[in-house]
Length: 414
Image (cartoon, rainbow, N blue to C red; front, side, top):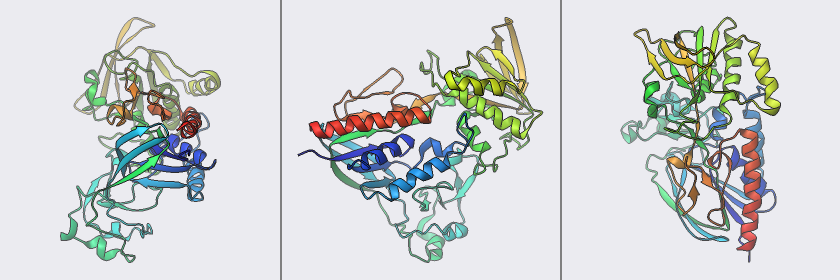
């Protein structure tokens, strides 16, 4: 008898898509996510390109599909520890990390109001702070608070416990393990920004006013650390001279060989963010080539109307001076001149590194040279989205749909 159940690992846009599409054709789905909320990187993005609309509306539609479908079991704060068996019959062990807040949480926020401890806000890349008990992000699903046990002082404080009228806080929660049996597995754990710390000639992450492109998304968002105002991290001043550096750690034999395919478009979108806030700001792009193909070329041409300074060349070095201004040294390939220019702020278009660089699939799947999963290398286990190859939201959704079709076939064969 076919095992009509599918495990989806990763609750970003690929995993959410896979879960709802499999469930809506009759399959039982276990959707697990290591974070305390669904949405992945898409939930951190300010706007999509080229329409420049916010992603939360699209995510909310999918959350409603999840809520209405009893075949989808959402399990957050969960990690796959082991996979045994074969196509059609996988035994999977899953670690469930404690939230310290139970299902009774109503999201009222009274617990956070009385909490005396602050911690760095990971959702905003440490650019601001939350209390030790906090809502993971403003549009969190599930809409439940969580305690950071590395910051919380525990029972010696207990103010959040006293403030919670529905008795939803349990400081004694511990990690547990659950085991499930499924017919197929879709691995959709997404991507991480290539670590700037590995790029020594760009300052190894020590140049204060050189931020990654995904951090720039948070600066531009009204739910971000500066409520949507793009500011220099070092002093909170408005940047009036800003540079964008393409291919930071990607298309590079010393780092990641793969082109991430979306960075050029993301940069063009972020130039629009800057120009909307600061029409007189000077903008420079350092680039190898601009990959805005097909329908995206119109968007590229529209952004070029902002009179951008374009330097064809990959910077050899990025430094900072005593005033925390950023110095970019590069060869302009069009003029054969070495330029050394100073900026208030620099945005590094860090490439997409698959999450499997840091956390492998606990099965004998194959990877390419950059760590992307080779889908189907183990029958019954399929990669979806940016863990399989770099791409935008639309291509990630398509990849998830394809993975669902393959997973369904595996449950039948099994």
